[in-house]
Image (tube, rainbow, N blue to C red; front, side, top):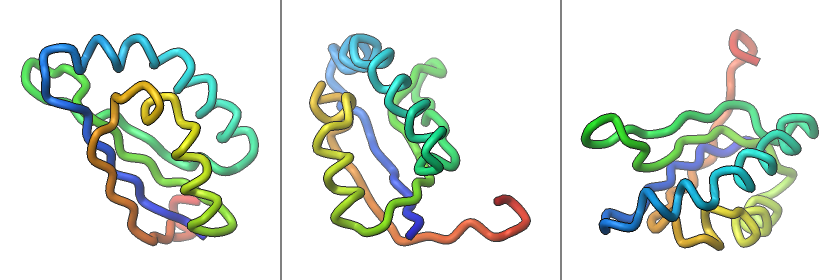
Amino acid sequence: MQFLVIAYDGTDEKALDRRMAARQAHLAGIEKMKAEGKALYGVAILGAGDKMAGSVMVVDFPSRADLDAWLKAEPYVTGNVWQKIEVLPARVPPLFA
């Protein structure tokens, strides 16, 4: 099942520092998910001054419970980077698959 994950970083003065501290571990996890077919697309949301302020991802997991298990271990969650997360069921059309 595919999901759209929209995650917003904190807005405090240390938010970007937390993101950069967790970024390498986050990207390593995404590379693994990409190889497993779980990470389909992702982009950084840019805020003021074109600084990263959040993320949008399209992911594919067997269930919402599996997605929630991934989120519990995701470095941007455990590192307190993403502070608001929206998850919506989604479907990538064959044109983009």
